[in-house]
Image 1 (tube, helix red, strand yellow):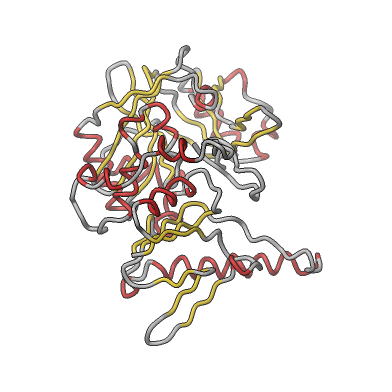
Image 2 (tube, rainbow, N blue to C red; image 1 turned 120 degrees about the horizontal axis):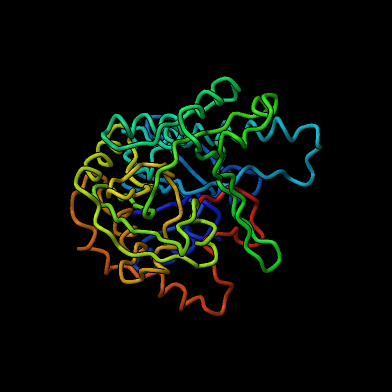
Length: 365
């Protein structure tokens, strides 16, 4: 069995997971996407026995592919500028062909997650509507660039939160970690002129009076939830997390929430992802969003005894339909702490920044 991780080899999650799999005796490799270099070239031979070659990796039935975070296509320095746009589009179209083909049943390649499921739930509106249909509580939400609709939304509430459709971007500038995020509180008095509201659509959402936040990591039928608290109960805990100023503790997932998550996973086809909830004063969990390839190894920094890295390795090397608890196989793999110790002399991967020298891409915590 081979495990191919679709991400740059220095990706902050691909690197430790690939290392752990190799240490446990599995064949594991990274492939960062379609581009001009030999490592990033790909071939599909469609015949009675389809052949998929990604870089140096030939996929076979029984292999697993983790669609972690492929890079955008890079261009050869010798390519004329006039041809770069069309070449990039061809690379992206070819990648889409590969990613969709991988999930066809006759190939018997396990995908985490299936590309079609990933594309579906990256849509914020789809996430929220399906979550509600599965019995999860969601805040009342408006997505709009209509001044009339936005002002009407604020008429029934004094304040709300506003956030963009695009992902959070985490990057490093010098020795400082910077978090670029658009989530903020907004009152009716703060609304700009109508013309400004038309410039770009945004997400306006009822603000939950929360006690704390929860991050839940889904792995098949298994889920692991953690309370996330900040000293001032900030609106967006990611600002504090990037500097380690949060308290993280394991927490039980309520049975109704667990049922809703599993129903959501069944309806969307997602088998892995990171979900965010806000817990209000009555203990009710409010679904905020899911990132199907969201960061999760940062939790091992705060709760090392849970070792999500070991559990994820057990998950991705198991059978897709298996209901076997990951606990029974997790000890076959080294932990994230062991990875950090073994790579102590190298530059440590920062779980909220981009690895040095890799193409800039979106990273969502």
